[in-house]
Length: 179
Image (cartoon, rainbow, N blue to C red; front, side, top):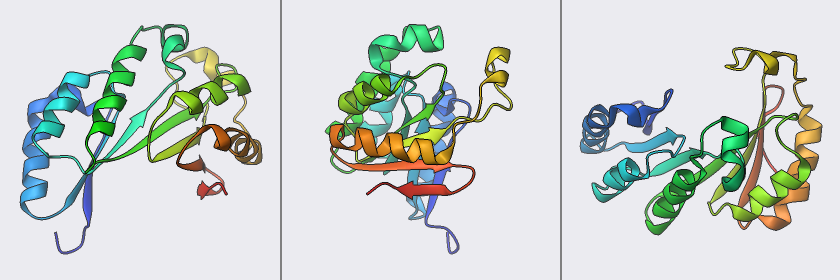
């Protein structure tokens, strides 16, 4: 606690092990550190449990696509759960929310990204650069990694549709706030 400001719980999906996550977050708060949870948002009931226990200071919510297109992009119809998680987090004034989308050129159009930015309610929206290494779908290994300058241009185009800070995260430049 003398060398750190916060602890990030990430995964896979950390809420698969909710009881253990609760124990860790309780301890982290007990020693005076801030907490951050990285989650897919598919377990809104578990997120509500953590919010009710006042264990979260910051949440990074992976939003894969517009809520209505989740089945098409992920193969699972969980968009409603992710949206519910976003709403629950936004109800808690003490928790900061970052929504982030990994931009995959073959899965997202510019229109999808504009629609997504319009649907998201968060303090920060981050567009992450897709990387074609270690992917679950072998077809994605052939997808070209988007140029960070193209991502920045896309972020500038969607900024008017999002009421908050817009960032781009790439391997080449790290995190950049889009003005």
